[in-house]
Length: 474
Image 1 (cartoon, helix red, strand yellow):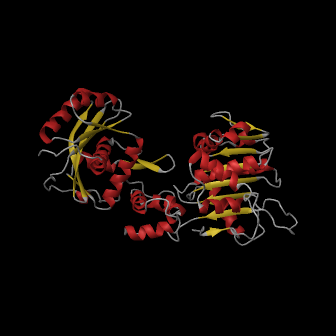
Image 2: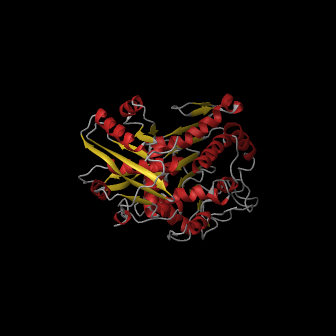
Image 3: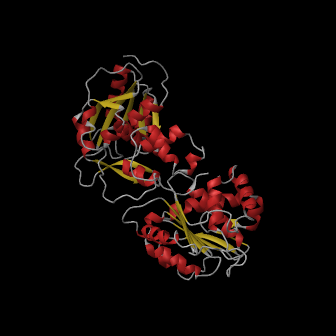
């Protein structure tokens, strides 16, 4: 079992745990609600979180920690673990008040919704507790509510358990407001879950500083469990990268995900994202926000003959149709070849569809990728003309953007050296999306759009992921 690289002792059987008697309940609920139980590493953290002082201690039977935090790379089951401990805390005390906060109410609801679903899917709990989508969970003297990330919303609450998501994005005063709400009472605890942050991560820097002292003091009442890689170096070799990821990602170490797919996913992120979100190490704020480093894109230009494989097209245009671009891509062994096929200023849907039809007549495209949000009218027009349409949803767009980055960094793409595309790439940057992804975005102050960049990314994505219906006629 993978252990945190840094943790508050003992993370062992040295202390009894109040969680032990509740594991059978949580296991039963999770099996009923989600068809599985917590992974071994998650159980270790839950058990450690609810450790109590042993017999003979002046505080025997009291929770050892008044506050604690877990820092672990993204996509390792933080939300599931947080939901399980929140439900456990809700059940442990008859007058329990569980409060959840995050950088936004929407993010705090990620944990809350897992608890709500677990309650509603378990007959015994749904008879005891009423779990709603907006009014919290209440019943039998217990309650669980999500609060805005403002300290004023936490004043006057007698909190028994506070769950804090995304500590690296929150100000220090919110943690103070929650811990004040516990009033220093025995058996009340505030628990944070997070990935590593930056120099500006006020709360998380504070917690790491406190943890450094706690690691040296066995009598501290702060619990800390930090999964992190040993250093910031991102190996160029995928095998070496995988081995490094295994040292700090419990889900990977336990064999719960496909290692090749996981490594490929990580490769689709810039190095500073890999260091922060997958090695779980702090990064400096202000790292380069270039879409690709230096002259990397220019070095991949080529005028070589097109491969004979299936040809895919993608159309990118904003809802107001101020401009639009059609890009094409095809696989050539391990490399993807792409170039721009058409571009427009203030086109009509018909003009774009006419260009796609001409492209199809000349090259028999396997399909046309269209944004599912902005391209409904265009998708309908292309289908009316008998063309195959692939509607790209947000998950596809995120995969396309990170996939383009990965291909460029691995020298796995070639392009036609289009001037429009070069200008747009110079004016493009990366923007975080949700908790685990990023999108290609326009750099602040840029005079160019990014329709050509996004069309290129989505055409390359289609060539990589979509199945052709027949041979391409060239």
